[in-house]
Image (cartoon, rainbow, N blue to C red; front, side, top):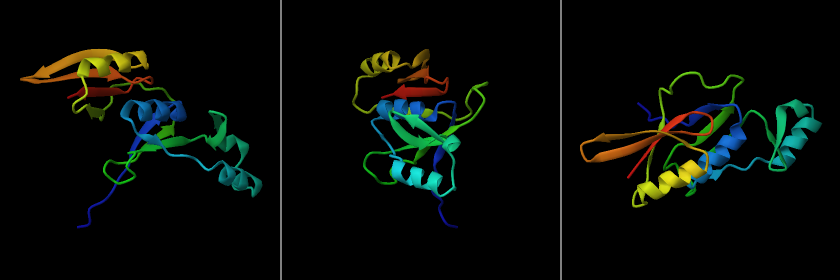
Length: 145
């Protein structure tokens, strides 16, 4: 059987804003969108202005934004933030577990709070400790060393 690659898709009401937030949080890169290509698609009638939005002064596809690991490899899956009309209603069935490596957990926790993450609780199992948060749209995630 062939091993498949995949991307992780996160539903979002503001995909470009959330992609920026997560890219800054993880040290990843938001994939650039080709404004010239988007304009050409509109000119050729293959898209409309309603398919676009302006984010940080640039025309982007309204329906989503993606981020990738900065080394440009498939080391980690691409994460795509997809526009959906409804807000988050229930607890996520999947979430990010962010492993901090040698970074100080308490320092990162304070940075996350100041960047808009909401502290939920601290968990512990034996010597392993993690902190659970909501991102700015209410998606759960955990951080640990």
